[in-house]
Image 1 (cartoon, rainbow, N blue to C red):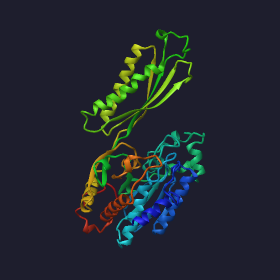
Image 2: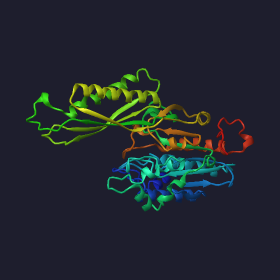
Image 3: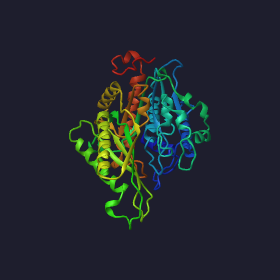
Image 4: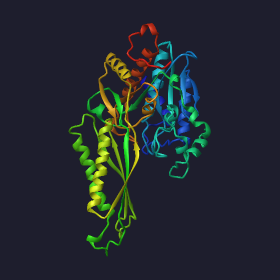
Length: 427
C-alpha cells in the first residue's frame, strides 16, 4: 500500500519528484489545479469509480452500488498556496482513494455509494476567499458578492471560473440537498504539532475554530519628520504600536483560565505614506482571533475595541474598526467521532482529541451533513511551505481508518445494528 500511496501522491501533485525546493503552486481555478484534477480523474477511473465534475468544478468519484442508495463521502482538495507543500489537501484526497482501493482489494461489497470528493479552490491564496468549492456544495456560496473579487493580477473569480470551463450563471447549482449525502469525512495533515507532540497516531477533531477578523484604521496626520515637534505629532504608527503587544499579551493571559485555546494575531500592517521622511499618517491593521469558544473570541474583540478608545483619548489619532469576518465556530459530529475512536482503538492507534485552528472544507460540509475531521502528523508542524511532509506510514494509517470507517458505514445493515452513528433526518 505504501508504494501505491507514494506513486499516487506524485500523480496527484503532477510531479515525478516530491522534493521541490520552490514548492507547488496550484492556485484556485488555475491550469495547474485543472491538471491535478485531471490526474485525480485518471486515478479514480483506474479504481473503477464513476467520475463527474459539478457546476463549481468539484470532482466527484463515486463507487456506485445503486441509484437510490445513500452515499457516504470522503475527500479534500488539491489546490495549494503559492509555493506550498504537496500534502496539504492532497493527503485527504489520496487517503480517500486509497481506502476505496483497500475495500476493492478485499472484495468488500458496500451497500451504500462511496464518493471521494476533490473540492475546487479550498485555499484563499488567490482571491482571499477560501473553500469556494465546498461552499457551493453546501449552499453557502454568495455568487453575487464573489463574482467581482479580483486576484493580484486583476482577474475576477467569475473570469477565472469561466476560463476553468465553468458557467458562472449555474455555479450555484453545485449545491446538494441534505438527502444527497449521509455523512462526510475529511483527512488532513495537522499543520501543527499537537499530534506529534503527544506521540499520537491520529487526531480526531472536535471543532473548527473559525475566526473573527478586525480591520482597524488609525488616522493621524502625515507631516515632515524633521520639522514637526514631537509634542505636536499625530503619529498613527506610534498610536498603533501598543495595540500590537496588547493583542498578544491579552491572548496569553486569557489562556491561563480558558478551557479552549484562544489565539490572536496582528497579522497585517499597512503604513501610509510609508516614506522615510514622513510621519505615518494612516495605519491599517489586520487582527485575526480564533477559538472554538466563540464567547472568548468575541470578548477579546470587544476589549480590543475598548483599548482603541483608550488610545484615542491619549493621542490625536482616530480609530475606525471594521469587522471583516465573524463566523461561528463549527462543532463536528459527536457520533462520527465516537465511531472513529472505536475504529482507532481496534487498529491499536493512539488518538488525540483536539480542535482545529485552521479552516477546512469540512467546516462547510458540517453545516449540512454529519461530518468529521482526522489529522495525521505533519513533520514539525510545517505547512504552506516546500518542507511540508507526512510519512507514507502515517498516510497509510489514515487510509486504514477511512477504509474501516467506510466498511462499517456501508456494510450489511444487519451486521451493523450497533453502529453509533446515524445521519438523523437524512434519507
